[in-house]
Length: 45
Image 1: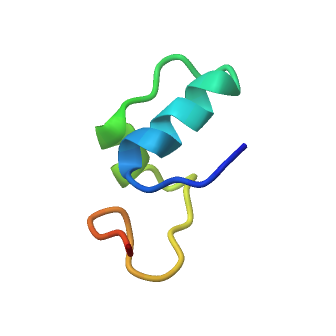
Image 2: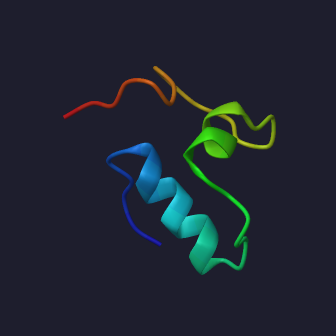
């Protein structure tokens, strides 16, 4: 789907996949998303 540079990018990918009810808070708190590395609060350059 592409590269995510911030949480809102992940939200957009999920919406494109048909999950219309997601937002940035859901993405940050969902147990369904596994963050590898730092997590949703920090992104590398």
